[in-house]
Image (cartoon, rainbow, N blue to C red):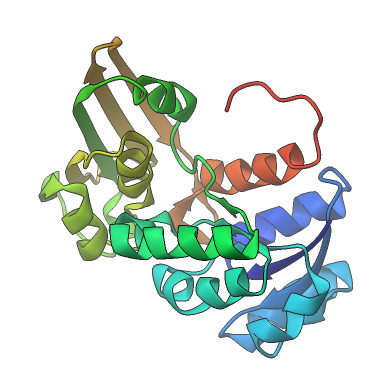
Length: 254
């Protein structure tokens, strides 16, 4: 499988390291970033190619990974799907807009493409999707992060937001992929609380789901990527595992 990547930041670097170790069975060949130097640096690691624009790679790849931003999803993913290519979307917040999500899915059906979204920085998504086959009555997310990862400086715990997931994604587009993933998985908007906490060193996500299946709670305490405190290492690992699973003939979970 030949793969291209959009966005050459923290996640792309971790993916590239795994590819170089030969663990994924994919050929990461093309790199695109609005910062051309970042693309050059990653391409040099794999002897890959820098794509001057996204269209330049599409005749030569089977799949494109988006690891850039919600803006990149909106501007670039439609043209990739329109060329019949599969995509992995990391900036899931862009998909909380139902009209846009439905538009992409219609395009994918017409062009025989597939859209993949990894589990990201949380655990328990298989259980959440299973529970969503019944009736979900409550879905809540409390996200607690070091102030630095939220781009602020505070000396004591501060609640920055409390409300629905869609507004949280709009307010914190680079920090709330988890809220979007939960809401999409349940087909119901999560209630979200975002806390800047100077006493924590990790990104912490507490999830509660209640429905006719029963109830479960999960807590994920994530290490941040060394090069980007807004990004969890687990989010990068989730796309790596997804890439690996696309080449597997046996799979546990959905």
